[in-house]
Length: 109
Image (cartoon, rainbow, N blue to C red; front, side):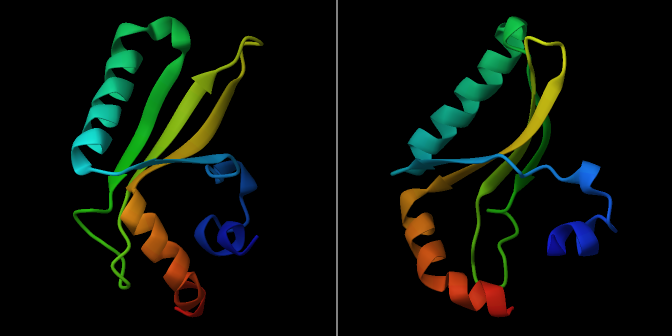
């Protein structure tokens, strides 16, 4: 609710992360392979109805606490003809462990 009030000025239709998935990988090479496969599927399998709306590379600009990930806003077409927007976080396993350890600090910042 705080995010809707502060980031979206009360417009809840702008919320993109009510559904969020995290894909975690042991190595950068596996993470890169996953991202390439996702983009390949999107371009070669349009019948899946998968669209990348935005990609934030937080590895190039980490948070004040050093957190970083790839954050994708995705849209998928549903059988009903409607679409659903969701978030996919792509990260390294070690970063997720560090995130869990420092989450209390994040809430304070």
